[in-house]
Length: 310
Ligand code: VAH
Image (tube, protein in one colour):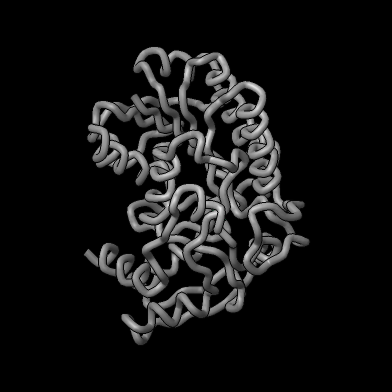
């Protein structure tokens, strides 16, 4: 059985729906600190669970005979800057709970998301390599870099089969993202349809690595289904599909909504975005588990507008 922690989040929601389609609703237990969407709550088992509570987590694992855990609960970059200690507590203690329960053989396989936020201001910005300087300057990035070190440590020291991906900014229509710096790339579609204009909190030339959610979910399942021996990276894999800046996504929207207007009013999230790479080299993921994306910016815009319109 599979447990998803943070099932009501931006990635967790789509991961839950995809895993339930693939393995059967009753085999995928969704959990979160709060209730989620109708489709998520009505399509299979759900538990209210605080991922930082070791005993509560151990109970859920035993009750449902869980063998695989997707730990998707975290506080993202923008919110984490407002509540550093709460972010560290959630992002790290949830990971320690899952790693230690796996060390106790209570979990066979773990997926834990890292992020391009592990890179910092002095990381090479273009085609950032898998192994390079990593001095993250955000609370979220520091927690993800530390998390990667712990995942690799538990694999090497205790044989814990934990797998991870450095997600770029993710774009989806089924749920709103929560508290990220790349959230503008989701909000812009909603605003384009609802009011025909959007004021972006990043500068027009701020180029960031991005990915449509279907590609991110596909990559996650591909990594989880790979043979353990083929996984050479036990910190977290670089993953990439496209990079764009706010003016480029605005132009792709104007191809469908010619009158769409964008304005720019950068806020504190500009400094976070400026500390991150503009593009990522994911040749390791391509080599080790045949990664290949399907969505570019135009196809992403088409899909987002189509689904948000209906
Ligand atoms: C954030 N969406 O903005 C997340 C992600 C790379 C960005 O980590 O914090």
